[in-house]
Image (cartoon, rainbow, N blue to C red):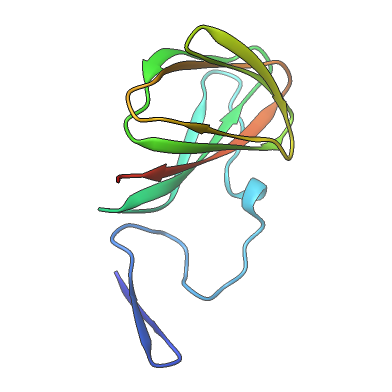
Length: 120
């Protein structure tokens, strides 16, 4: 998609959000008691932003980061394990994760995250 604003052109390959409008970030993804929920905000060749919602006790098992990541906790509390070292993270906390680094997530409470993916 291509958007123009004040004589500048912006290219966002994939988004369901209208450019130039204000949204409440954490409200854009809903928790599901059966599984972890993902919702893309924007994605292009340079990276993307994904919202993730967990109900208490839900987890993502150990996997490799597909790119360099910035993990931002928007709501709740999680245990984020990176390279076998657990970190407790709460709303307002963030962590950087390198590409191909093993990590997992366990929701200690209902939680929402924003992942910023950088394909560098």
